Image 1 (cartoon, helix red, strand yellow):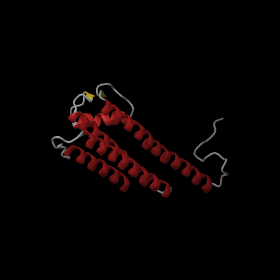
Image 2: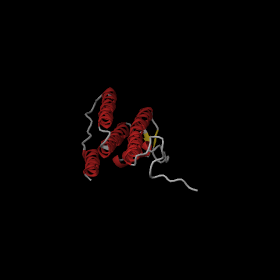
Image 3: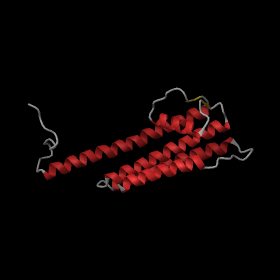
Image 4: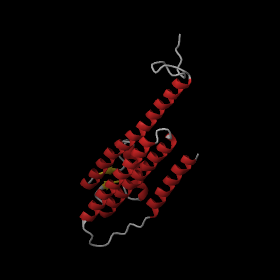
Length: 180
């Protein structure tokens, strides 16, 4: 229950920051500043993901905490890219078609995560397309880590079940029965 509350709290905080963060850009700020901030942000996401993966490997017996940590990374990734998309569109309205609000940007970030692509909002400019490509690659890594957590948990539970029931490693797990 504690991990569910932690995950829900992380999501709530990420959304609170996303919707309330003042995003005023000083006049005359060069585009390179935005690009540098994006690169630094992606670097921060990579660092955060590496920390969670290391924690995942170190805590093989605490699956719920590992899943909660990786979900928290996923929330931060979605919000980071949503902010990126919103700022790209705010600074250059030709970057996206159909993206006007923070909710539109969050929607696009989640749709990109799911690789659904409904077509109602899409990247039109080069900057938006680059950001979307970076998100897709990053999402594949994070989702891959989530699948690794889930599959390692299944393997761990099967191993424990085999040991508890005195079965050999090559025996079927106790939950599976043969028909016929």
